[in-house]
Every structure is written in C-alpha cells, then in structure tokens.
Amino acid sequence: MNDISNSDRDVVGELHLVAKQIAAERGISGSGYRTVFNCNSDAGQAVFHIHLHLLGGRKMSWPPG
View: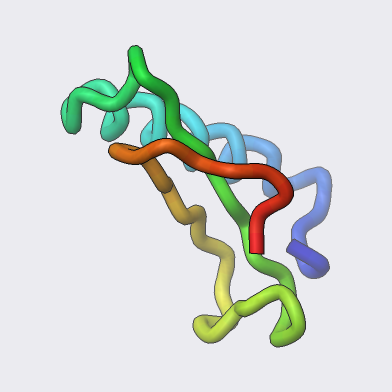
C-alpha cells in the first residue's frame, strides 16, 4: 500500500470489485465480510506486493488482531 500512487486507482478499485464478486460467489455477501490490506511486517504482511485478503463465513470481532 505504501507504494501505490494515483496511477494505481484502477487496480485498487478492481481488487475491491473482484472481492465483492467472490463474496457473492461464496455466499457471504449477505452475512458480511471484511477486506484487509496488510502493509509491512508489523501488520502481518508476508507477501510484498499489493493483494487483498477477503475474510468471511464467520462472525468477526472488533478490534481485530
């Protein structure tokens, strides 16, 4: 996330649209889901390129972590 720029708007938007589609396909749209971008190691990032985590299928709590 630290490396994205204004020219990456389409990519970041597409990631969210695909997450919405996958949530619908997996049947979790109605009950709810969470999207997460981890940024750097203290946040849990282990793969250092932009990607989105889609979490769902169970009750989430707050605060996370």
